[in-house]
Length: 341
Image (tube, rainbow, N blue to C red; front, side):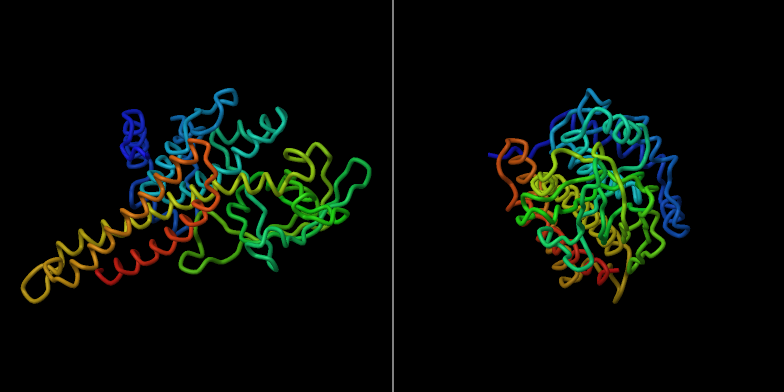
């Protein structure tokens, strides 16, 4: 049975994040960030100083070891009130945890601690131009030249690629027939020779303060110490990563839906037509009711997903369902909100 109530600690955390973001990221500053395409580093540093960037990461690396439910609630709150900060936090949820989970002490020192102190998260190089979501169909490969891995290929839709200090690149060993047993994760610094990163235009907000990129890897040479985790275990590590990535996605899109819903409700109580507020018309009331139902369903699915994950259950199917449903339902809520507005 899932307990849908928040703990006192979770309530205090949410309120603390909200207060900080309302102070550091007022609405006009958020709009300015999107107009100018500038990331608000001062607000992100304030998040770090308050200890929020380390949520969900082990205490021994400087983080705060909390459950996935708490991390999801934090991401939901940052996505509601933090504007462009949400992309950094959502990206850090899977990638920085990956380094803590699979990385060496040297890798943790190099990548995780600067992030907790207010640096950018690592990016994730999984999707490719020709394979999309078919991870097993990856074409990016590597070969050994002594103790140096030579990586060739390309990645697509790499979130925060322009801002990240390094990218977690998954590449296959072509000498292994089964990609599930022949893929490896590498930590590739963005300034490594042979790495080219281009920002992709995004429909609707091309100048967004955080980037989505294409990454080209041309004879990129990295040492054996750049392996994240175990060689040939990269596919399984990626699958383990997806639960956190999908929880980040789900909690983030629900925040978008809630913001759109609240804007629509506020406007419906202000705008007057035919001598009364438009919120008094049954058609508008039906739209608002349907929006509220979808948000309730999404929140319930998020709680169930996090609750089962925190209990150690296999949530791979549920995580995929949640990402599908919540992304689709959020688009429907936003579309209805636009109609009301």
